[in-house]
Image: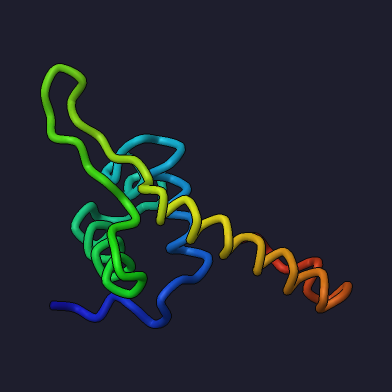
Amino acid sequence: MPAVVDAPLGPGKAQLLEGVRDLGSISKAARAMGMAYRHAWLLLDVLGRCFGGPLVAGQTGGRSGGGASLTPLGVEVLRRFRALERATKKAGGPATARAPDT
């Protein structure tokens, strides 16, 4: 298996979680980021292992075509990460306030 994790969670993985939340699909979130579905799936799988439970729940196909959504754990992990990111930028003053949100 290719190495897919440098750190448990960072801005790119948070963006992937937000994409799943906003687009309702792992494949749509991956596509929006220019990422292969398999790579996105592997990232989400590793995140789930790091945090002790799945951050994304998939629904099988059917009339609506399936999809995915964040689990309560996924929502909380994403919320805490973005709060920590905001606090870090605020604490760092002007130099970090200009840092991109990616």
